[in-house]
Figure (tube, rainbow, N blue to C red):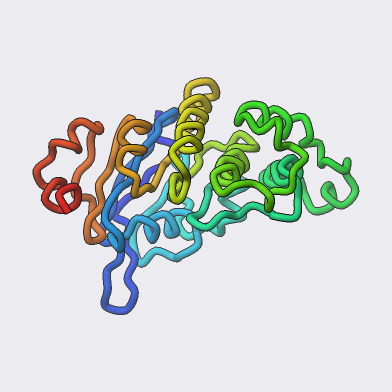
Length: 247
């Protein structure tokens, strides 16, 4: 069985600068993969090339064996590839429940079905299930803009998983979240992987968050893959310690 995601020889140049320089990796079905590295090492640029926000200078991206290199984000979304951003993408003037319904609509239906379909686009039951799963029941009717930053991060993650996507890429999910909410987020991410078989990739600066959540970790430095392996292997890798962990 082929991996869910295959990235092969990915490159992205900005003028004479190689932000991503030949990155290759894969993500297996049901895996939680972590990607770490110093600021400016090319992590987010790699994500953006995979997800169509940027056009790669070279290399291939495949989802379930199909070449999706350079495909538009909306088309990738319909193939079941979802993401979060470093900056929150919640709709502050909509309720938690309506945010989830809107996120679900991005994966399903046509413009006509959205205009003339049911008010909840047929996503109400799925939204309620996700609200319960992410333990947001007490906030379901609250406006997203009134939530704490950590609660908004939890909602943002729930929105990414709303339509049962094939693959989710999470960009800095732990950034700015306090320790209590961080524990809740990690617990829910573990649970959605364990109970629903969700496959996802996490880019993160919070080393402990990645090491305790992910089964495999890739280290990127200066636009290249420096090392990959289990969290324990990465912690003890001399090149990683020299390039990243020791700084």
